[in-house]
Image (cartoon, rainbow, N blue to C red; front, side):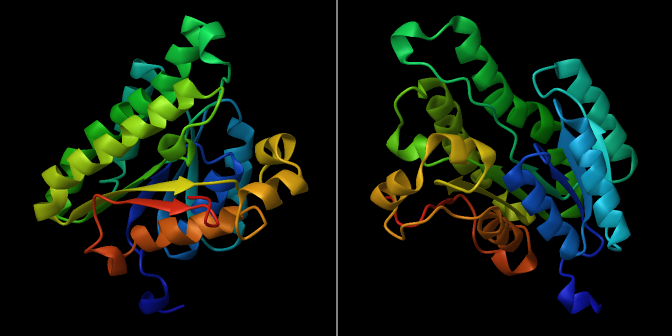
Length: 248
């Protein structure tokens, strides 16, 4: 395969939350585009190891990493290991958790854990990777958000707050890094095929909520992330881009 067909050849890419449906699709897309992909997971490290083995069998380059984004020391050690192999020029902050409850009944630990993984995890991973990225004068940071951050969703005040905070961080960081060839964007999926979505939305609910009358696929989200991570998206930064079938 020639270099033109592999626009990310020579780049190193981190995908957090790569054990889930969307994260694994993003990892496959970046690997297909030629990146060496660092696959993160916490609760399901076996899944990212299997994904790394699968990608390697297909001739791609990947390695698995297991650490908790809520553990500052564990993240620090993992980042040091990543940087030992060179700068990470593509960072996809996909990891996030749900712990839903209506707000009057939400426990403090439900609030804190969701914020800690989605928002503080973004900081813990991305901040130490930025300076080495800046030295290369090329980089792509893509933050995975949610339609819940734009419209809100009952029972998800914690999740919506964490993801909406990422929107502000995306816009502010994009201004800081734009002159150095680094773009920062967010992708906000709607209802995407996954075990979690399947458990919460039956086909009739999806037809009612989504104008295109179907759930999106992980590959459709990955296609946008792959574009934003590539050379053709150099003039797109500070944007929150929805993938939701016309929901909003």
